[in-house]
Length: 358
Image (tube, rainbow, N blue to C red; front, side, top):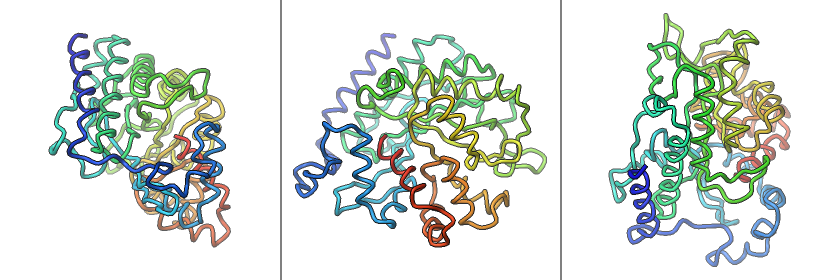
């Protein structure tokens, strides 16, 4: 534990190391006084009211622009660009596409691969590792060296076939151990900011549980992870695949979930209303944002042929409860879906409320 305490000092140094960077722009600061009177700038108001005000001020094109991981700025409202995709599987490693630690900052801690860390069976160690990752993530962002604070980790898929190449990213084969790892890691990264299901303070950083769900295949006998249809019984879903995600949400209070490429019993994970809305949000009380895996929306039409048109794929995922697309598919096809009257604008507003709330 002494090593972790020492590494935390690196985070403190990074917090004050801003000489080679500029502070990220914010909506309501002195550089944009025209926005100060808007309700979304009033920090005394509840987040829900601030977000409703902000979304109400966006045009349809501006709304659609925010539905992808590389969200562009909206200068007229002082909204900076934002990158939803950052990585911190076993340490802060990627804080935006193309930004790695080969430049000004080289001090982020790399912990062992997760399957080795999990073999310690030490819940407090997992939590402390999460704390250091969260602190260093915040430090890098404060120093202007990161594009976002939403990290797509932990990977909590059940690992029972050694031929799956990503098994080293996971805590292993046991749902109980995996669930406890997920909760400990997430609480450490986020800073224990949730209490009683509600945000009690600011997130230190945002963790995202992936890949939801029954996902553990890359390429087998001509079937790849994009078209794989996991046939899972109700019992096996409840005993094996769902417990880690339930723990991640209910105990860890994760602020993010990533839906997987594969189908589960015929339905693509990112287009499954029962999975995303009824189970995660309804039964477990999930109160964050849901992202697709990268290009998962496009494969619903291009590879799986589950949707008849690109616009139908957009409608399927947004109505299922997904909020942001890793890729450009929603940016390219959402407006046409609205114009065809297949998608009400209220579904876009719902997704944006989840995103801006985080």
